[in-house]
Length: 290
Image (cartoon, rainbow, N blue to C red; front, side):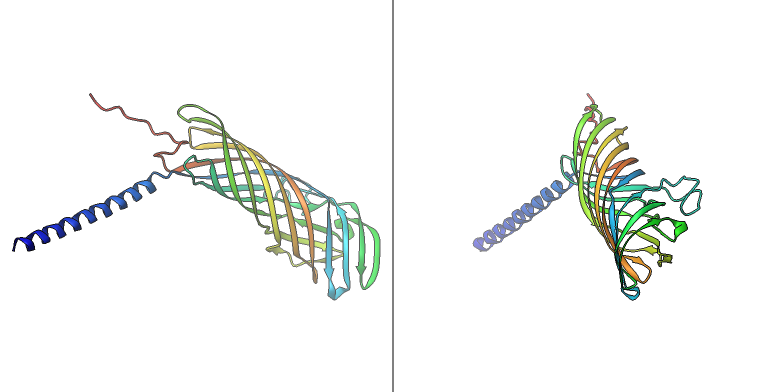
């Protein structure tokens, strides 16, 4: 009889100990998860661009065309010019946004969605060397590339660089309460380009619109000044290399590659997903009452 009671008590103790250990393990895991800090940030700003010369290859099989426009010059479009190639006094400005998340304990590594609404226009009134085949015949000529002469080519609603970046933050200076903080960040990424293609070549216009048009990769460095922990101003420079393909032209497609140098000024805010343990958002310690 006593042996049965003793066996029952031992079994019950074993169950309680196992349950306690399991609960403790779960609690420790939960506590570890809770201790992991994070910070979400967003910024919006203005950018200005300079482009390398580029060769545009045009293929229009139905027209018997397969030619290159060699080393064309391009520029950006500020958005406030009174004399616009589109004859509009104001267009959507060149803008950018960044959406990112710092994910590690030191809060110096982040993943970022990086978008630049850049405008690319082949400069009007330039002499361009055209070489290849036109209307089934060999072509090697120099043309005046101008709207009045039946030519324009631009991504004026955006060359549109979209990058998925890895970000590394280097702290340069901060006050003890982090109300003033200066950081240097480095960014690198790759992603698609989503251009809005509009052109007129030898008097023939394309079916304009947005499209996925290839890939780009970029490197960016930024100086960020954060005030009162949550708001920041950022000045950055960026180099980007884009490969465009299957761009729409009349009864055909075009492709080109070019490099871009950007200067970017933006403003944004940063919010902690959890302040406890977050080095960018120190929590004040309250002294126990005597």
